[in-house]
Image (cartoon, rainbow over all chains, first blue to last red):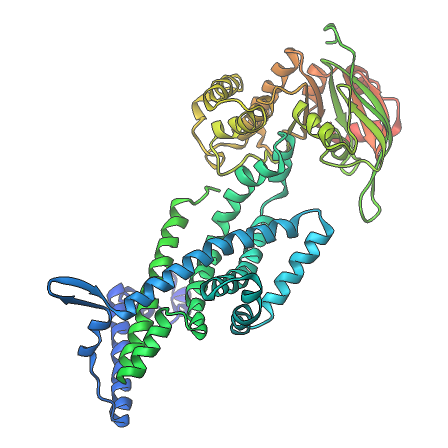
Length: 278
Length: 250
């Protein structure tokens, strides 16, 4: 290498190369742990100033308890099961509503397109909490739906609106040659969607779909406003009864986190497993 | 080349016009008739309406006026007629348009099972026969992305043939291929022609036109400029527009 080129090399070049070598994953992990420790320390400082008396040992019985050799499910976990139930039912219905809305929106029907648009915009532009009240106090009684039914309906319509936009984006992202090939083979609209379009579209929209499923589970906490004993409401009741405010809410948050992180991980593997070669 | 016995008219195109939204008139008052077992090559500069005309023949585009009749079925508003024609007319695209989430075999199977209502076993037997015919049986389990362009296009031809169509349309089937893969696709098409398949081919492959086609249509600005046998067309073009075009592609 000529002297001229050597002179032009940045004086930090050598250093940067060495520092890069030091970026072992362990360094990231240590940094992360240090950050968490710092946050915990700050929190304990501030709760100390509040005079808060931590009593973590009182929390486990609200999760699980073993009495006389039998496992008893605590109130928080009962709430979690209810959250699973309402989220699961709403999710299935919301998928149906979302997909139907997307298909109607993409169909040739003029009125169908307008109706699905009106549905989407109404739901998307009003708060979920207002919709839950409206379903519970007005629509539910009209339709003869109980507490659970009204809440499911509210969640279904709300998430269905967002899901429909995700489905629509996935479907329209496919090359029009896919439709033309299916058309040329004489496939009906039903089989074109079922065998050609949706299998490809769903793989593409798996990431935003996962996001929406997670949002649904988190939003299901709002049904506690109509006194459905989900995880959030049970946490609130326990916290009020015991004054374990911090411990219980942190525990509830951690449970939600575990569920949603598990879902994200599952989606990540599904994405890899069903990846289409391109 | 035209020693083979041609049948009655299978495609009748009468005064067909097509204008796209925005005012581009792709096809103008186009009329022609194509016989059974005939191989017709359509040539013309880009934007001359060749592809649009071809796409009108299986209902991918809707003509604004005029009538198209394929095998005695009018291509009209009747959904049943349209569906019938789609089953009888196979199409091969420039960009292959294979279904990327299905293997080569599944691509060829799909319409047989869904439209012809064959069993999986029956469909697979016929598909393997077709894949064998286009020389790609050993790749039947591969996904499109694992195949070369030429191999993909041969699978696409097998997929169209799986419906046992009476007419095959080819929309620039070799334009997207690397030069060394063009012949493997043309060979398959030549075999089809020898077997008596009625074919309408938009292509600029002069060798193919010379060797296989019964006649050539030269189009420009949505209309027929000149028709004739390939021999006549290449050696002795009558119109100036044709001469200019040939001088550019030769």
